[in-house]
Image (cartoon, rainbow, N blue to C red; front, side, top):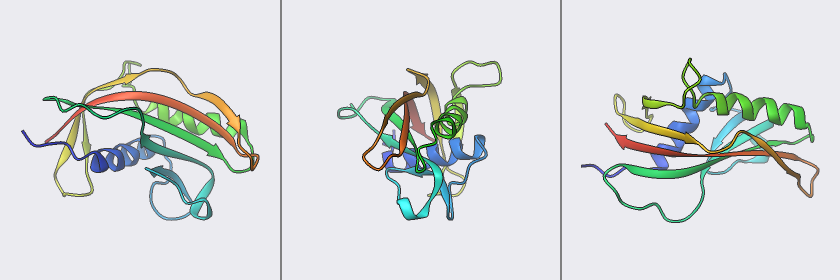
Length: 149
């Protein structure tokens, strides 16, 4: 069994979620980032998809804890919530159930992909704080079980 590359998982998941929420993942200004964001190239409201928590155990189906942090540069809490909610909604199917056996294509290898066996949505988006620059921050967390295909 091939090991899952978590960098590819995060980038692919960010691209998938951005597309599902009709947000920009490429170019500038960018609304969705993987790992970290660059403020000067970000939209007024942007989200970062990143891994959080402890070490990922090696098991036949890799599991990763993911956090999406949405920041509104202008302190617009409503805008931050709207974008975070759109990204959170991308983790559910049309019937409102968490994604199961969903294919996400990777940009790293054309034709290759990652199968999300399960997305466990732990909490809906919640307001965290205004940081020292007056930016509003909204966060949600989820866990994915995934395998490369």
